[in-house]
Image (cartoon, rainbow, N blue to C red; front, side, top):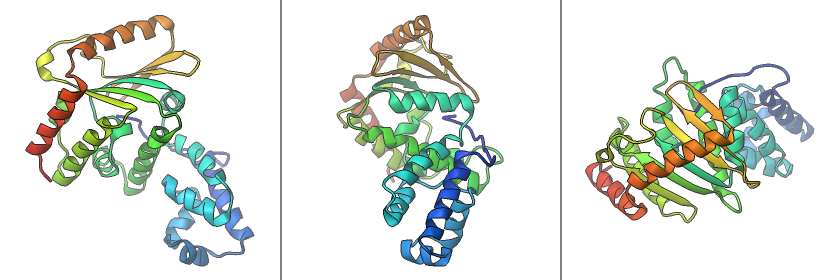
Length: 275
Protein backbone atom coordinates (compact mmCIF):
# COMPACT_ATOMS: atom_id res chain seq x y z
CA UNK A 1 0.00 0.00 0.00
CA UNK A 2 2.56 2.58 1.18
CA UNK A 3 -0.10 5.26 1.52
CA UNK A 4 -3.40 5.82 -0.26
CA UNK A 5 -4.75 9.08 -1.70
CA UNK A 6 -6.63 11.54 0.46
CA UNK A 7 -7.15 14.74 -1.52
CA UNK A 8 -7.84 17.97 0.31
CA UNK A 9 -9.25 20.88 -1.64
CA UNK A 10 -10.16 23.23 1.20
CA UNK A 11 -9.19 26.87 0.90
CA UNK A 12 -6.92 26.68 3.97
CA UNK A 13 -5.04 23.60 2.78
CA UNK A 14 -1.26 23.61 2.41
CA UNK A 15 -1.78 22.84 -1.27
CA UNK A 16 -3.80 26.03 -1.64
CA UNK A 17 -1.22 28.03 0.33
CA UNK A 18 1.56 26.80 -1.93
CA UNK A 19 -0.41 27.67 -5.06
CA UNK A 20 -1.26 31.15 -3.75
CA UNK A 21 2.39 31.76 -2.87
CA UNK A 22 3.52 30.70 -6.34
CA UNK A 23 1.02 33.05 -7.93
CA UNK A 24 1.98 35.90 -5.59
CA UNK A 25 5.69 35.49 -6.33
CA UNK A 26 5.09 35.44 -10.08
CA UNK A 27 2.89 38.53 -10.02
CA UNK A 28 5.33 40.33 -7.71
CA UNK A 29 8.10 39.56 -10.22
CA UNK A 30 5.92 41.07 -12.95
CA UNK A 31 5.85 37.86 -14.97
CA UNK A 32 3.06 36.29 -16.96
CA UNK A 33 2.67 32.52 -17.00
CA UNK A 34 4.02 32.53 -20.54
CA UNK A 35 7.12 34.47 -19.48
CA UNK A 36 7.67 32.21 -16.47
CA UNK A 37 7.36 29.13 -18.67
CA UNK A 38 9.93 30.57 -21.07
CA UNK A 39 12.32 31.49 -18.24
CA UNK A 40 12.10 28.16 -16.42
CA UNK A 41 11.45 25.72 -19.29
CA UNK A 42 8.36 24.37 -17.52
CA UNK A 43 5.12 23.99 -19.46
CA UNK A 44 2.72 26.92 -19.04
CA UNK A 45 -0.28 24.69 -18.28
CA UNK A 46 1.76 22.80 -15.70
CA UNK A 47 2.74 26.04 -13.93
CA UNK A 48 -0.88 27.17 -14.00
CA UNK A 49 -2.01 23.95 -12.32
CA UNK A 50 0.62 24.36 -9.62
CA UNK A 51 -0.64 27.87 -8.90
CA UNK A 52 -4.25 26.65 -8.91
CA UNK A 53 -3.40 23.93 -6.39
CA UNK A 54 -4.39 21.22 -8.85
CA UNK A 55 -1.01 19.49 -8.90
CA UNK A 56 1.75 18.61 -6.44
CA UNK A 57 5.13 18.93 -8.10
CA UNK A 58 8.32 17.05 -7.44
CA UNK A 59 10.83 18.66 -5.12
CA UNK A 60 13.31 19.71 -7.87
CA UNK A 61 10.60 21.92 -9.39
CA UNK A 62 10.21 23.79 -6.10
CA UNK A 63 13.99 24.06 -5.76
CA UNK A 64 14.18 25.57 -9.25
CA UNK A 65 11.44 28.08 -8.47
CA UNK A 66 13.01 28.97 -5.11
CA UNK A 67 16.19 29.75 -7.02
CA UNK A 68 14.31 31.70 -9.68
CA UNK A 69 12.44 33.84 -7.13
CA UNK A 70 15.39 33.96 -4.69
CA UNK A 71 13.17 32.75 -1.84
CA UNK A 72 15.64 30.48 -0.05
CA UNK A 73 13.78 27.25 0.68
CA UNK A 74 10.33 28.78 1.20
CA UNK A 75 8.65 26.88 -1.63
CA UNK A 76 10.32 23.61 -0.69
CA UNK A 77 9.02 23.97 2.88
CA UNK A 78 5.50 24.71 1.67
CA UNK A 79 5.75 21.78 -0.76
CA UNK A 80 6.60 19.42 2.10
CA UNK A 81 3.40 20.43 3.89
CA UNK A 82 1.32 20.16 0.72
CA UNK A 83 2.78 16.73 -0.03
CA UNK A 84 1.45 15.41 3.29
CA UNK A 85 -2.11 16.08 2.14
CA UNK A 86 -1.81 13.34 -0.44
CA UNK A 87 -1.95 10.73 2.31
CA UNK A 88 -4.54 9.59 4.83
CA UNK A 89 -4.31 10.93 8.38
CA UNK A 90 -2.89 7.72 9.90
CA UNK A 91 -0.19 7.51 7.24
CA UNK A 92 0.65 11.19 7.69
CA UNK A 93 1.48 10.52 11.33
CA UNK A 94 3.70 7.60 10.35
CA UNK A 95 5.48 9.81 7.82
CA UNK A 96 6.17 12.44 10.48
CA UNK A 97 7.81 9.81 12.67
CA UNK A 98 9.69 8.36 9.70
CA UNK A 99 10.96 11.79 8.61
CA UNK A 100 12.64 12.38 12.00
CA UNK A 101 13.68 8.83 12.91
CA UNK A 102 17.36 8.21 13.55
CA UNK A 103 17.06 4.40 13.40
CA UNK A 104 14.60 2.39 11.28
CA UNK A 105 14.07 -1.35 11.23
CA UNK A 106 11.70 -2.56 8.52
CA UNK A 107 10.33 -5.94 7.46
CA UNK A 108 8.71 -5.54 4.05
CA UNK A 109 6.33 -7.54 1.90
CA UNK A 110 6.78 -4.94 -0.85
CA UNK A 111 9.72 -2.95 -2.16
CA UNK A 112 9.92 -0.22 0.50
CA UNK A 113 8.92 3.22 -0.75
CA UNK A 114 12.24 4.64 0.46
CA UNK A 115 14.08 2.33 -1.96
CA UNK A 116 11.81 2.51 -5.00
CA UNK A 117 12.77 4.04 -8.32
CA UNK A 118 10.36 6.57 -9.75
CA UNK A 119 9.48 4.30 -12.68
CA UNK A 120 8.78 1.35 -10.37
CA UNK A 121 6.64 3.51 -8.08
CA UNK A 122 4.63 4.68 -11.08
CA UNK A 123 4.17 1.11 -12.33
CA UNK A 124 2.93 -0.11 -8.95
CA UNK A 125 0.72 2.88 -8.16
CA UNK A 126 -0.88 2.77 -11.61
CA UNK A 127 -2.44 -0.56 -10.66
CA UNK A 128 -4.69 1.07 -8.07
CA UNK A 129 -8.29 0.94 -9.44
CA UNK A 130 -9.85 4.21 -10.57
CA UNK A 131 -6.69 6.31 -10.32
CA UNK A 132 -6.43 8.90 -13.09
CA UNK A 133 -3.19 10.27 -14.54
CA UNK A 134 -3.20 13.36 -12.35
CA UNK A 135 -3.69 11.40 -9.15
CA UNK A 136 -1.04 8.92 -10.25
CA UNK A 137 1.61 11.58 -10.80
CA UNK A 138 0.73 13.19 -7.48
CA UNK A 139 1.15 9.89 -5.66
CA UNK A 140 4.45 9.18 -7.40
CA UNK A 141 5.80 12.61 -6.47
CA UNK A 142 4.70 12.18 -2.87
CA UNK A 143 6.23 8.73 -2.55
CA UNK A 144 9.56 9.67 -4.11
CA UNK A 145 9.55 12.83 -2.01
CA UNK A 146 9.75 10.68 1.13
CA UNK A 147 13.26 9.72 0.05
CA UNK A 148 14.50 13.18 1.02
CA UNK A 149 15.19 11.79 4.47
CA UNK A 150 17.89 9.53 3.02
CA UNK A 151 19.95 12.64 2.32
CA UNK A 152 19.74 14.15 5.79
CA UNK A 153 22.92 14.90 7.69
CA UNK A 154 23.41 12.74 9.59
CA UNK A 155 21.39 10.22 7.60
CA UNK A 156 19.22 7.74 9.51
CA UNK A 157 20.46 4.21 10.07
CA UNK A 158 18.12 1.92 8.14
CA UNK A 159 17.88 -1.88 8.24
CA UNK A 160 15.42 -3.47 5.81
CA UNK A 161 14.47 -7.14 5.64
CA UNK A 162 12.75 -7.88 2.33
CA UNK A 163 10.80 -11.10 1.92
CA UNK A 164 12.04 -13.19 -1.01
CA UNK A 165 8.51 -13.16 -2.45
CA UNK A 166 8.99 -9.44 -3.18
CA UNK A 167 11.94 -10.25 -5.45
CA UNK A 168 9.90 -12.90 -7.23
CA UNK A 169 7.10 -10.50 -8.14
CA UNK A 170 8.25 -8.33 -11.08
CA UNK A 171 6.26 -5.54 -12.68
CA UNK A 172 5.25 -5.98 -16.32
CA UNK A 173 7.94 -3.71 -17.77
CA UNK A 174 11.15 -5.73 -17.74
CA UNK A 175 13.46 -2.70 -17.84
CA UNK A 176 11.63 -1.02 -14.95
CA UNK A 177 12.02 -4.19 -12.90
CA UNK A 178 15.70 -4.63 -13.82
CA UNK A 179 16.39 -1.01 -12.87
CA UNK A 180 14.57 -1.47 -9.57
CA UNK A 181 16.66 -4.53 -8.72
CA UNK A 182 19.83 -2.59 -9.59
CA UNK A 183 18.67 0.24 -7.33
CA UNK A 184 18.15 -2.21 -4.47
CA UNK A 185 21.67 -3.50 -4.91
CA UNK A 186 22.99 0.08 -5.02
CA UNK A 187 21.02 0.96 -1.87
CA UNK A 188 22.47 -2.04 -0.05
CA UNK A 189 25.95 -0.65 -0.66
CA UNK A 190 25.22 2.63 1.11
CA UNK A 191 26.83 2.95 4.56
CA UNK A 192 23.58 3.91 6.31
CA UNK A 193 21.47 1.12 4.77
CA UNK A 194 21.57 -2.57 5.62
CA UNK A 195 19.49 -4.80 3.35
CA UNK A 196 18.70 -8.44 4.05
CA UNK A 197 16.59 -10.97 2.19
CA UNK A 198 14.37 -13.40 4.08
CA UNK A 199 14.34 -16.57 1.97
CA UNK A 200 11.12 -18.52 1.49
CA UNK A 201 13.00 -21.51 2.90
CA UNK A 202 12.93 -19.78 6.30
CA UNK A 203 9.36 -21.00 6.58
CA UNK A 204 6.86 -19.74 9.15
CA UNK A 205 8.20 -16.94 11.33
CA UNK A 206 7.24 -14.46 14.04
CA UNK A 207 5.93 -11.78 11.64
CA UNK A 208 4.06 -14.11 9.28
CA UNK A 209 0.58 -12.74 8.70
CA UNK A 210 1.27 -9.29 10.17
CA UNK A 211 2.02 -7.48 6.91
CA UNK A 212 4.90 -5.04 6.64
CA UNK A 213 6.46 -3.68 9.82
CA UNK A 214 8.39 -0.50 10.61
CA UNK A 215 10.12 0.19 13.92
CA UNK A 216 11.14 3.84 14.18
CA UNK A 217 13.36 5.30 16.90
CA UNK A 218 13.76 9.02 17.52
CA UNK A 219 16.79 10.93 18.77
CA UNK A 220 15.34 11.02 22.31
CA UNK A 221 15.17 7.21 22.41
CA UNK A 222 11.41 6.99 21.96
CA UNK A 223 10.00 4.65 19.34
CA UNK A 224 6.85 3.65 17.49
CA UNK A 225 5.60 0.62 15.59
CA UNK A 226 3.80 0.85 12.26
CA UNK A 227 2.00 -2.18 10.83
CA UNK A 228 0.81 -1.95 7.25
CA UNK A 229 -1.49 -4.30 5.36
CA UNK A 230 -3.01 -4.14 1.89
CA UNK A 231 -5.53 -1.43 2.72
CA UNK A 232 -4.82 -0.25 6.25
CA UNK A 233 -2.12 0.81 8.65
CA UNK A 234 -1.83 0.94 12.43
CA UNK A 235 0.55 3.05 14.51
CA UNK A 236 1.42 1.79 18.01
CA UNK A 237 3.38 3.81 20.54
CA UNK A 238 3.11 1.76 23.74
CA UNK A 239 6.44 0.54 25.12
CA UNK A 240 5.07 -3.00 25.40
CA UNK A 241 4.17 -3.04 21.68
CA UNK A 242 7.59 -1.71 20.70
CA UNK A 243 9.30 -4.40 22.77
CA UNK A 244 7.09 -7.18 21.38
CA UNK A 245 7.64 -6.28 17.74
CA UNK A 246 11.31 -5.60 18.23
CA UNK A 247 11.75 -9.12 19.57
CA UNK A 248 9.75 -10.50 16.64
CA UNK A 249 11.88 -8.48 14.23
CA UNK A 250 15.08 -9.80 15.81
CA UNK A 251 13.84 -13.37 15.35
CA UNK A 252 13.12 -12.74 11.68
CA UNK A 253 16.50 -11.06 11.22
CA UNK A 254 18.18 -14.21 12.56
CA UNK A 255 16.45 -16.19 9.80
CA UNK A 256 17.42 -13.78 7.02
CA UNK A 257 20.45 -14.01 4.78
CA UNK A 258 23.45 -11.95 5.85
CA UNK A 259 23.88 -8.57 4.14
CA UNK A 260 26.57 -9.92 1.79
CA UNK A 261 24.54 -13.05 1.03
CA UNK A 262 21.52 -10.84 0.37
CA UNK A 263 23.41 -8.70 -2.17
CA UNK A 264 24.55 -11.90 -3.90
CA UNK A 265 20.95 -13.13 -3.90
CA UNK A 266 19.73 -9.89 -5.51
CA UNK A 267 22.47 -10.14 -8.11
CA UNK A 268 21.29 -13.67 -9.01
CA UNK A 269 17.75 -12.37 -9.42
CA UNK A 270 19.14 -9.56 -11.62
CA UNK A 271 20.83 -12.16 -13.85
CA UNK A 272 17.46 -13.91 -14.18
CA UNK A 273 15.80 -10.61 -15.14
CA UNK A 274 18.05 -8.75 -17.59
CA UNK A 275 16.78 -5.45 -18.98
